[in-house]
Image 1 (cartoon, rainbow, N blue to C red):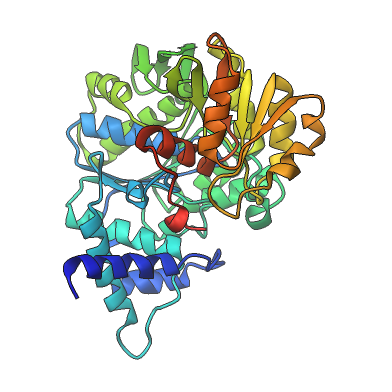
Image 2 (image 1 turned 90 degrees about the vertical axis):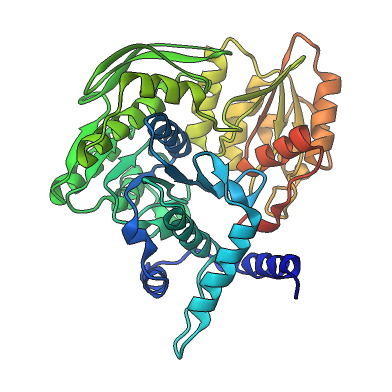
Length: 442
C-alpha cells in the first residue's frame, strides 16, 4: 500500500468513529491516554469551557501567548471547513500526513494487546491526537476548548494550570441539565485542585456555582467585574476597542473581532494569560497583549465576507448567542435586512427563529450539507416566518446567490443559525466548493 493509500485508509477509519455518541464517563479516555503514554501530562494547559465565547477566548489567549514568544498549541471544536482546523501549532493546521500518521500510530497502540481500547468516540480520538501532536511539536502551552460540557468532556483528562469559564446559558440541555445552575456545574467540572480560575459567566447563579467549586478545590479565582473588567467599549465594522483593568491597566485596546461582547472575551483571555505568566514565571508585556489582540483570527464569528452588499457570518446557534449576535449587529449600526438561516435539529431553532426572523425584511431558508439540518419546509412553517418574504434554497451556495440577487447594495445580509451553515458558507465563498461534512464529528 502506498503512502497516499495508507493516509486515505487512516482517514476513512477515523471517519468511521463518528456517531458513537456522548459518553457518561472519562474511564475509556483515561485508559486510552495511559496506553498512549499519557501525553497530556507533559502539557502546560489553559482549559476553557462555557456555553458561548469559549472559542473566541481560546483564539485570543493563543494569539497573546504567541505574541509573547510562546510556542502555542490550540485545540478547538467543531471545525468549519477542515478537520485539521481543530489542531494547530502557532496558527498552522496539523499537516494531513501528520494527522494520518498519528491516527495510524494511536490506532495501533489502542488495538493491540489482550484488552484493546477500541470504543473511543470520534471526539475522544481527535482529542488524543491533539495531545500527541502538541507533545511532538514541543509546545510551551496548549490552549484547549472543551467540546461541550466540561466535567465529562474528553479534554478534561488534562491537568490544567489555568481554567477559564466563559458565558453560561441553556444549550445541550439533554446532556448537561435543564437549568443554568446544572449546566454551570458541568462546565465548572474542568476545575482542578489548586489551579488558577478565570470566570466571566455573565450570570449570577452560574458565577456562584463556579465560585463555590473553586473554593472547594482551593483554587485562586478571578472574576470579571471584580478582579478584572472592561470599560469604554466601542464597536464598529473595523473591530472592537476597550479599556482593560486587571493586574495592569491598558487603554484603547483593539481586537479585529467584531461586537461589544468580544471586549468581554478579550478581557477573559488577557486575565488568563496574566495568571498563566505569573504561575509559570514568564513575562507578558503590554505590547504582547496589544499585538496579540490585533492579530487574532477567528473565522465565522461576526465575520464580514463582502461589502457590496455587506454580508456578515456568525456561528450563533443557541438563544444566548443569538441574543448577543442581534445586539452586536445593532451596535455596529447594521440591520439584518436579509437573513440566511439554517439550523440543526438538536438545537432550539424555534427560539432562535423567534428572535431573528422579526428583525429581517426577507428570509432565505436553506440546509447545510448534512441530514442533521432542519428541513426548509419546517422552517418556513414557523409562526415567526408568517408575513415575511421567504425564499427557499436547496443548499447554502444557492442561498448565498439568492441573497445577493435580492438584497440592494445599501442593505445587509446576515448568515446565522448554525456553525455548520457558516462552515458551508465559508467553504463556498473562499474555495468555491461545498463544505465536506464527512468529518464533522456528529
